[in-house]
Structure formats: C-alpha cells, structure tokens
Length: 328
Image (cartoon, rainbow, N blue to C red; front, side, top):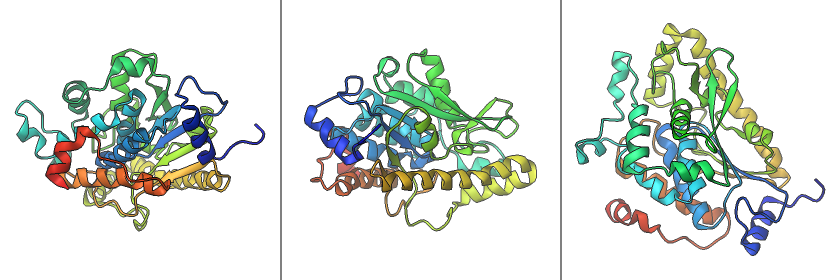
C-alpha cells in the first residue's frame, strides 16, 4: 500500500469518521498485541480499558497467556467490567466467596504441583463470576486469536475465538495459559503449552494475519533489569533444569523470541505504524495475590494511556467505583 498513514493519523481519522470494527472506511488493519503476563494481566486490562474508553478499537487482537486473556474483553466492548475479575484472582477472593476455589497456591511449587488452577479460572470466574460474553465474542467483528505452543513441533498455534463453539473458546483460554509448573504438570501429555514459549509478544503473528498497524501491550515494566525473575520463576527454572532440561531450554529460548518481537516493533515505530504501551515500572510478579497491588497496577496502566497519547485524564470507569474507593 502506498502512502500508509501513521498509527496516530489512522486513529484520528477513524475517530473523526466514528468508524467501528467491521465497518471501516479504510483498508488498514489495526492489531492489539498483548504480551504474556500471568497475574500481570492487570496491566493489559488497564491499557485495554483506557483504549476502549478513548474509542480506540482494534480490528484484530492477538494475545498470549495472561496478557491475551486480559485483552479479549475488548472484543465485546466490556474491558472495564472484565477488569473486575481482579476481585477473584487473589488470596482474598476465595475467602470473600465461599464457593470459589483457591485459584493460586504458590506453595504448591514445593510439592512440584501447579500453582494455578486455570480450569477453575476459566470455568468459574470467566464463565460465572465476571462472565465473558461467549456469544458476542463468537460474532464479534474484531478478530481474536490466542497463541499456544505445540508441545512437539514447538510451533506457534493461533487459536481463533470467533465463529467457534463456547467449548473451543474456553479450551483456547486454558491452552494459552498452560504454563509449565504454573498451570499444569510438566508430565502433562496435552499437545499444547503456553503461548509464551513460542510467541511471548505475538507481533509476527499479528503481521501474518494482515495487520498494518499495531499497538503492543507490554505487561512488564520498561525499567526492569534483564528478565528480573521473581522467586516463583527462579524456582520453576531450577526444577525444570533438572527434571525437564529440554523444556528448560525452551523456557530460556523465549527471551530471544521476545527480543525479536521488540526489534520488529521498533522498526514499525520508526515508520510511525506502531505504538508500545508499557509502564516504567510494574511492581507485581506473575503470582501476585494482593488485591490492592493488583488493582493499583491496573489503575496505573489505565492512567498511562492518555498521557502517552497527549489526551486529558480519563474518569474512572463506573464498574471500578468500589475498587477505587477501597484501594486508591
């Protein structure tokens, strides 16, 4: 395409025309790319809620692991509501609701068991507590894909969430978050692993699906030193090193793939066709269980977006009223 507009020009033109996904007046495809994140999904949720409030809506969403799950509510116009799942993804959640399973148990690592109950997360929280509108997702004009990694071939698998049954949609959420030692046993024979092993920042995947412009959501802070592994990640690496050395190498190899995605993004930013949303610091780890810290991180991400785009501060979403009063 000749004379491709910059990302900011495309956003401004679409706002002026008030065009929506599925009925654009231009040939371009804006993709929202979400990095893996585990409990740092709250960063993706905060960024997504701000973009939705500013009427910056993607035509395509490609996400990995927790970051991807945090972004998919955007396809149904309900990110702010979806972010209230923070009420359940912490140590207080299962005390507040007697019927809610304990979703995260870090001490399971000492028993070499998964620390996160992803099945309950999908089938309880995302299906009943703060339900994803599976039917709306199925017919959404926004294309949605979650990544997974083929256990044997090591290839990235793009799982579509549109035009597929609810059972397949839920399985895609489970697959993208199937982190070794975190959400499943390393002895699990399932063919799919977490998408972070092959596409931690699925930029190439978005481009392969026709994206011309991208907004990259980073769940990790910009000023983090190296990989800055948490104690959970360090324990996982140690266990894998001795019990599953091949998987350990693949876990280490994801850093190279992350660097490749960052290089492509920088090239597109030079051309004006990409924007990276990333907080300077993210003060939570992948297994953070304190509701106040999870929500404050989400709120910081929400406030960050209009600053980056030179817009006025956004009012808090009405769905967050109780959380704002409680934690800010």
